[in-house]
Amino acid sequence: MKARVLVMMKESVLDPQGQTVRKALNGLGHASIAEVRQGKCFEVEFAPNTTKESAKKELDAVAEEILSNPVIEDYRIEFVD
Image (cartoon, rainbow, N blue to C red; front, side, top):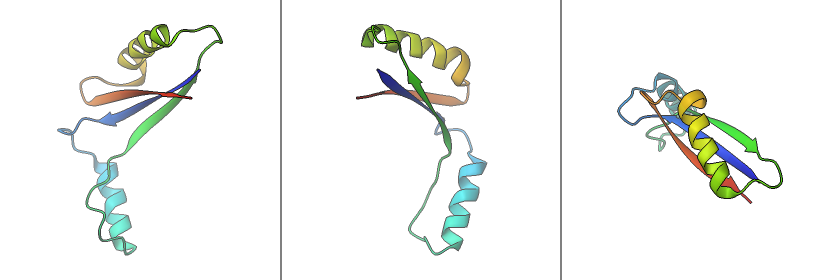
């Protein structure tokens, strides 16, 4: 079983890297792009007999403690078939 943990800056936190990318895209003629937010993606593979429930619980703990900064970032877990 595989999962992805997507970590993004909270909406209330300024994202200067995303703004820089948006400005560059606009400068290259992509004027319809109004906002870009930058983030991180972690792919995690579990041992064969891991249940989805235990994997979710473990990923929540890992994302809270290691992969994200809960003060300024949110995370989302997606399971990949």
